[in-house]
Image (cartoon, rainbow, N blue to C red):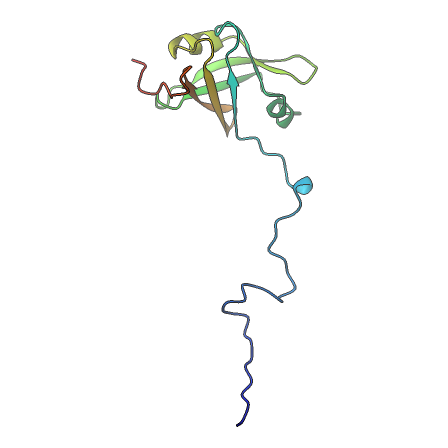
Length: 140
């Protein structure tokens, strides 16, 4: 019986094996830090300035905005302007303007506020009440 030989063309089930290049991502230490989403829990007066996570403040290091624009996920294109404070020790706070946003969206003790950074100093916000349910649709 004559033997037949097959020649590999680099296509098919091999999925790149033996090609000499790796399809693995670089190790985590070489990837840029991208913080897109985070949340805060309202443990104190919901109307006073709110500290954002240090990791997010670190992400903005060198490009700290004087203000951010909050967009409620359930309220279309309206943006709420909120001044930002940096305390010089790596902490970032939502300050003037937060109170109006919090009142308009009924933020209360024990609630979770979820933020998604959209770039250009815009944060999309979802508010969850003490039952861990979104309050979208509850506001007038």
